[in-house]
Length: 319
Ligand SMILES: NC(=O)c1ccc[n+]([C@@H]2O[C@H](COP(=O)([O-])OP(=O)(O)OC[C@H]3O[C@@H](n4cnc5c(N)ncnc54)[C@H](O)[C@@H]3O)[C@@H](O)[C@H]2O)c1
Image (cartoon, rainbow, N blue to C red; front, side, top):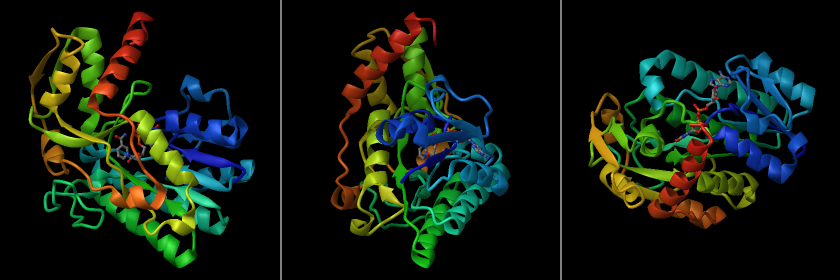
């Protein structure tokens, strides 16, 4: 691989995954692109460009300019925002993906990475230790697009022999870039508010349990799968990747260990129903077996690191 284009690079995951890829493949060889015009500071040391994934020509222009031979496609409308604007979610998540896949086919890309999500699961899916192969009947527009996206990617693997890979990310927790309107955003906001106000109003109930992952493990999962030997993979675009699962009560308790006067109150909104339709925990044995997936962080080690990093940002007046 010579040149990688990251589409949707300025979001929560892209702002850090692009840096991780630049560390592996070289700063000049990883082009950050997004529909937002201004990249985050961490991406300004390398090439960046405006791309609207829903406009095939806009992607093509950059593919040709930089002679791109691999695409990491992160542009999406996430679950909570998708429920506010389902047609936008369908357009960006489906037409954006189709444009990327068609360009990958036409220009014979060496590799494409497309993340899926635990949003592919729904209320009829077994909630505990959710199997790799199981019922996929999501109730959100975001979930619908993620199931269709997995199927579409597999179609391009089988029909055209393309190399496409992807994991079903759980809720991703990080301190660098704020999340972009998903249902698991509470698990990030709680740390910011704990540092800033010692108090958080949570939009899901205390006993809500979801699978989550700390950003360093998300970067590890993404770069490890990106570099894995394709011939050894039986699955391609839909790997379950587990890391940790906790209720909001457990999350708040882990923060209280370090900020004893931290308070949490509950005001569930429309996102409760989305959270209730998703699993508690995941069976990720396929990822472990096929490309050696193993997470490093648990709730306590993540909480310690999040509070330390956000505490430093707060002292500098950055949050
Ligand atoms: N963050 C999570 O917890 C999580 C969980 C599961 C799956 N995912 C998946 O990971 C991927 C990245 O998610 P994220 O959390 O970084 O999302 P995000 O919302 O933080 O970032 C998405 C980026 O895509 C850009 N974008 C939106 N529409 C675009 C378009 N038409 N053209 C180009 N760029 C566009 C946005 O400006 C944004 O910078 C998505 O596929 C998402 O579904 C994320």
